[in-house]
Amino acid sequence: MSSKANTPLTAQASSCTQLCMSSIKTFVAMCHAHTTYGTAFASLGRPLAPISQDAAAFFEDHVVIGEEAGKVAVEVKGGNKVANAFAGVKAAIHQNHGLLTASRHSIDSAAFWFIALERCCQQQLMIEATGITPKEVTPERARYSREHVGSDYIGWLHFQTIWSDLVNTQQDMFD
Image (cartoon, rainbow, N blue to C red; front, top):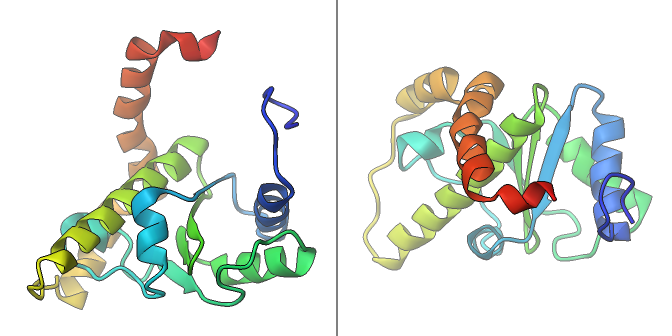
């Protein structure tokens, strides 16, 4: 059981997130899940393309972790590989596994970037399903967008409306 909630904490989650958090001392929070679109996109084993302003927030700020793709990370060695790959970026697409985000600022920022990454995976899969090649944001414009809308502070700021909505509509979550 986790120490803060009355829910089970798996060895996999414990190994991966604890090692990342302990290896990268600047991380304040991490999010990881096997979401529908993130897991589907992770099976492609490639980074997000800068197809929108939203995706540009992750341009050169996420990695694809291909090592041990699809293997459950219950060993320290597997968790260390994830932690090493994660250094210097806010997000990771773990091939055949799922999504991870981290923040050096707040839990709110890590949560917002996780939600945003899942949405970007959904958008990319939807566009690719059309069979039409999307027009990508140029690298210069993608970097500019990332620098202006991809920070931990912006992640924290964007999460505030989500948090406010949760507080107002899901009051039973505090019981």
